[in-house]
Image (cartoon, rainbow, N blue to C red; front, side, top):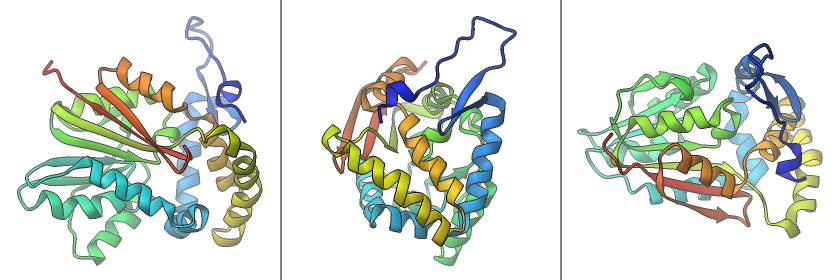
Amino acid sequence: MDNNTQRPHHTDSDATTTEQTHFGFKTIDAAQKSREVAQVFHSVAQRYDVMNDLMSGGLHRLWKRFTIERAAVRPGMRVLDIAGGTGDLVRAFAPRVGAQGEAWLTDINSSMLAVGRDRLLDQGLVVPTAVCDAEKLPFPTAYFDRVTVAFGLRNMTHKEVALAEMYRVLKPGGRLLVLEFSQVARPLAPAYDWYSFNILPRLGRMVASDEDSYRYLAESIRMHPDQETLAEMMREVGFERVQYFNLTAGVVALHEGVRLDAS
């Protein structure tokens, strides 16, 4: 399934037209998307990690480990994890920043954030947490050394706005890391599509009692910008030294960008 042919098109030139966006393969009002996405993650929060292990065969842990190592977090740094969900990245970052640093766990979804916070507390990690929208981050400009978002960008309504906010809160020299499902290598696409649209919804029904949410997740991956498009979106909001790493034949890609200017 080709990303470009599935992506809906709209124009802002007609001020009387309600802005449209996609929710999976459906076209909906942009104002409605955050509510629809919230319902998905309220539904799956308690079984989210189990489903991740089943869906990826445990590979999501290796993808996140690669992201953590690329972040190169050091003592005293301030790190913001957006759409941090159940806290996998912050669990690694918190000990690395130490007592003088900060590792923030944030998510727009209170159910996901509660699961992540509680799991970190169970492991003896007390970190600052906040329910917040990536398109309107409640943090000062040039505050963080690192911003990370793993498997969350594709669910954001205005990705370019969210990326600009991530740029804003980074210090000069700070780095953004975006781990997200991407465009798989073409020879694997038929098998990947069959798995995504036949197996994932069934797993969702059996394990999380929610087939529809996992069908949406499969669809949302196809609607997400491909590797080069996302890299260009990052450049357009100001990031430099943008690069990406294809993982597992492009099933997932890690994008990196640096904020160099001090403006």
